Length: 264
Image 1 (tube, one colour):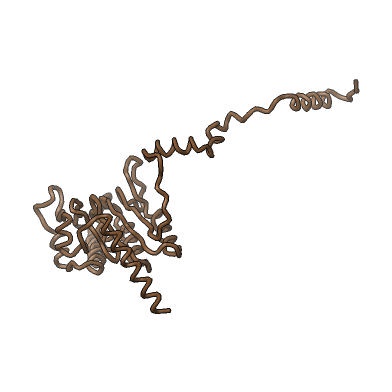
Image 2 (cartoon, helix red, strand yellow):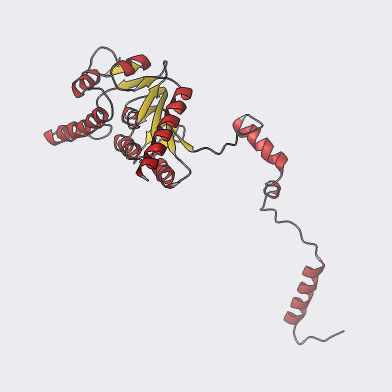
């Protein structure tokens, strides 16, 4: 038996031999489910749990679908129970769709109650400045600041049961009662009106009449425009659903292809 000069060296020797003999056990901090990530049965179970279906349709498409749902979240974070669309998430998606050569068209689907004015205008300006064909489709509702986004594309659709609420800009929080505050709200309202009239067939006076109408909304001034009326006023291009929207987008894509061939 070897001799040791001190007890520390003996302790280290015994500790090393004990570690070699002890079987390796999995770290309890790592759940066993992580090791089963590549298990096809677990992936199928996750799909059923999250999406309610066994198979997710896989399709290589030249059309990018962008959905704007719930409330458009701007500079202030909304409560977690609110269904929101964050504009800082949409802007990178639009930039990526613009740069991706495989994407030839964008379909924007809206079912929103509105939200932050500047965030909504930012999204609308991004959609309007796309070089690729853009078709918008209003499902359910395209209210408030959702109206500029709905008209920002090259062509717009609205379903028969969808509605669009047009009303003046409203501010929450501290409002200072001075003329400068009124001028600020008036200029912001003018930005929204000018954008909508530039990207649709409705006139400025007609839109302001709808915006300032009294007696229709119970707790506000404005107008709740149903699908067919939105087309009649010139706010939306055509009445239709998903099928018509995709057909129109494919038509615009084919037109863009032909124009590109002529330039070459």
